[in-house]
View 1 (cartoon, one colour):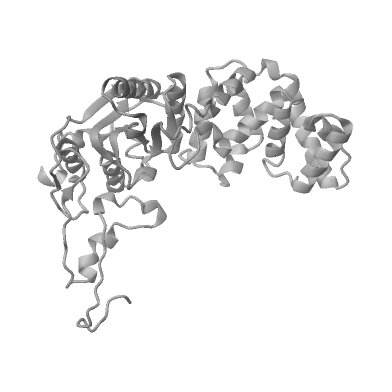
View 2 (cartoon, one colour):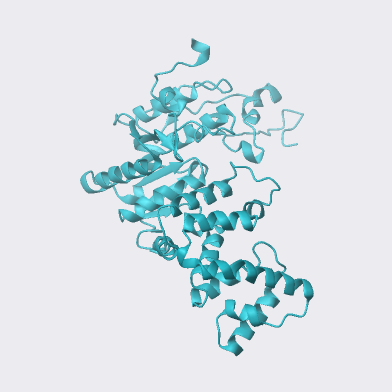
Length: 399
């Protein structure tokens, strides 16, 4: 529609894109739109923009080494006039916890000894759930950070709601529990809407009690609403009575099972174990195993509200690779470079390689690629992309 059939009326049509950075296949985008453009418009002219203004030759070479393993691409040799820099750094750790610690230790050194500022550094990861371990270590080491284009781990809805349940269970007669109860009273759906909550607050005010206590004495006319409230109270009362003896990880497991919570939060009859929300819940449960008491665990999660460390606009940027597209940083750490994470076991290998290419090519001066020998408590194999990027593995077509 945009290009005239006449051909001589002065109209023109231009597109600009990078087949090596086409990473939105999950939204329906297709790299074929770029690769097949010359077929759809056989008289079109191809102009290769091959001068990179961002990265050092060493970083650019690693990016080129990686992406040349893709068969579906427009072949081009990128070049740069940027002065030589450091070779790409590889970090190997025993687990994702020690990986996060090694990244933060290196960041401290960059800031204290090499003159970099926190806001010049980014840590990129493939999936949202990976931020939990990083955030914990940044908090412990008091290194300022910000979650770019997202929310912190303990503020994600599926995580926050379970913490709200725990808050009501450990201390129902508190202002914090009042706020939490209003968020969870209809989770999963009990048909207790805004009008019900307003009536509950009025009743509690008249009785001069907290909301959970008011819930047990409130007069409810509609039978199905009354039934749902009675079931909620019967479920919560034994947990409240035994709260001091409950371990937080066990309680999270109980809540997920008894409330059919995973299905509610994903809106799926059979939630996929690879679903990002399920992954976040698993991370929450894993974090809770380090604590024996609910109060201690909740106090720990509240430390993530410290704005001098979290959500610090001058801090290190933590973000998924998809959020990083189009951005650039003097220093970039790409973490979680293990098989099953990057590349994801669900993803198309060439698409996953493009995602890794985008991550690496955000770096201007220093690039760190990091992997661990275990992940989520299981033995892990380093990503095949690492050997490809370092030029240790030749593309299949050249063998």
